Length: 423
Image 1 (spheres, rainbow, N blue to C red):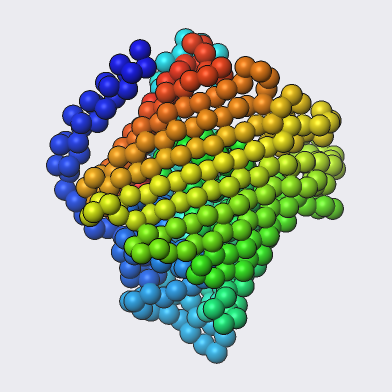
Image 2 (image 1 turned 60 degrees about the horizontal axis):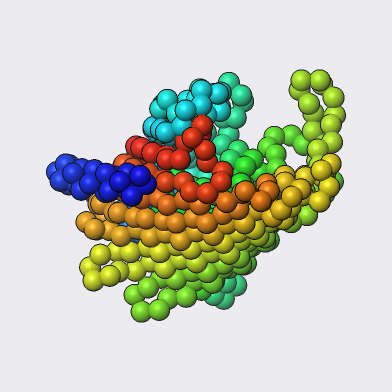
């Protein structure tokens, strides 16, 4: 049955390809930083956004301060250097998801019926150069539910850096409503931070996202960067807004980024560890409340980006593990099971069959939830990414689930359609 569905899906992709290729191609630039630098988005991104290439990593590592081609005027003084224009863009993601389950519960029902998120994401991005050694990025959500819940500030960071020989030293205060502590500083495309991945179906193609490392977080990323790698130590808490902190959690990230021939390679490790104690005002009860969090997880990831002939190819592999909860009163934020460890590995790839325009991909996940003896949660994902313009992307993902976790109630297949734009 699964083989038949796989054949139907591949046939559908083949039928769609001529239609997709008939859409006029444009060469629009990624808005915020392209406006500042004068570079096309192809300068920073590998095959499809938001995937970064080596130049894009350098621009991000240097705090978004590069003036690029110098086409945009700057206001400068002895201790001032910023663009004459406040650069901004609007980012939106419209998404449709359909599972083939039979349940009509609050959790499973919408996706089994066919769930439309219009929008799934919609936010105003403002960012760029503040001074020679300081940059910033701000994301303001206009999704109705976020506005209602008071979650308008989705992201904020302000990299402050200095150069010592070939090294860049940075302190990056940040807050995010959904990206986790990796949002402070991350350069690989493996899903180490939720936004940076090749496939829309994140938990099916990234171990880090399967572990649940994308969440509200605030902290300061302390980074030592070189073009061949970086080290990041980030004290963080799992919250936003006003709070008192007695003890933070710890996020540690190490990455090497060698280049072999025309291949841009990357390998890294991530560690989430520690106990946090945070005090905040509970608006519901108007009381001062202590919130404690425990983190115990790690991940390893690899990427290779290059070409097979004239076709761009991105390869990504990840492994992650979150230890089981020892004390039910002190749960591991990344695995609440007291039975076993949560373990997962993934491998995926995207091939640009029409470079910079149409890419086809596939991924495989092998996972155990840690919830008991019947906890296998494997998946095969097929994907298509089409870019009618540099800053507009259509994605089609389809995942087939195998193992014990997915039942006929919640469905053994997931289809996702996404229209992503930034202008």
